Amino acid sequence: MDQNVRNRLWEIAGREQVYEQEPMSRHTTFRIGGPADFFVAPADMEALAGLVSFCRQEEIPFYVMGNGSNLLVGDKGYRGVIIQVYKNLNRIEITENRIKAQAGAMLSAVARKALEHSLTGFEFASGIPGTLGGAVVMNAGAYGGEMKDVIRQVRVLTPEGDFAQIPGHEMEFGYRTSAAAKRGYIVLEAELELSPGDADQIRGRMEELKEQRVSKQPLDLPSAGSTFKRPEGYFAGKLIMDAGLRGFCVGGARVSEKHCGFVVNTGGATAAQVRELMEEVSRRVKEQFGVQLEPEVKMLGEF
Image (cartoon, rainbow, N blue to C red):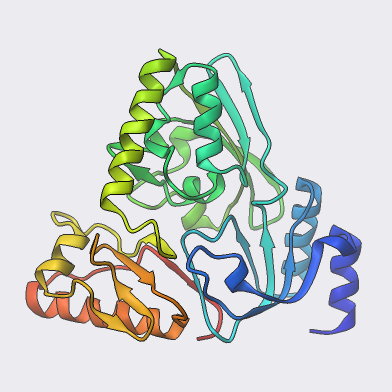
């Protein structure tokens, strides 16, 4: 990309917030990914809106990301602008039983704030390794809870560049989807409505869920969490295990032996190897059980 693009990004976000040819392996939980042409971490919502507007006007590919916990970036990188909200846009405010948090706030941080104020209803998300914005877009859930259960309203940036407040009941939440995912909204912040609770009980539930995650999930290796969506009437991990694919490898990518729903990077895995493994797993599960697995991991860039 040319000098004019660089200069405009500097003007909008500040030179210190703009990185060129930034390895995306530094910014994904898979620890995989080639360089992005430009990687920008805007310091405020105005800069974020300005970046999105500029990219849209100039027809420059862009992607807004959180902490990269659900992302597989191609080995050849991303030709365009990656906008990261995780580092700077993460403010959390509490008023009575409501929590307002910016898109870059980690779910674990929001859960800790809820605990500090004895608010219950968000324990399910305390161990999900993602940001609030991404969780809203995909209606993230775990252990019987989903974002749709606690969202009161969401502030978004529309594809037309307008700011809008959308009530939770109009967010069209479904299994791993929402109005934001369907319509290209960029989530800026969300307001959660929780219930007063007992701090000891909330803490106990969070500890209980943490222990379940540690005992059942391969948290010691880089991954993007659950690799496939849950097929209706089935569990992806069980289908993969029953297909005889526990520990199946392609290069440094492996189906976790601890939880077959996870693909892990055992060291030096490439994005191409992860994608090839996912395709082979899907093929074998379809062949044996007639069930089509859909990736939960978002794939981005050039492989």
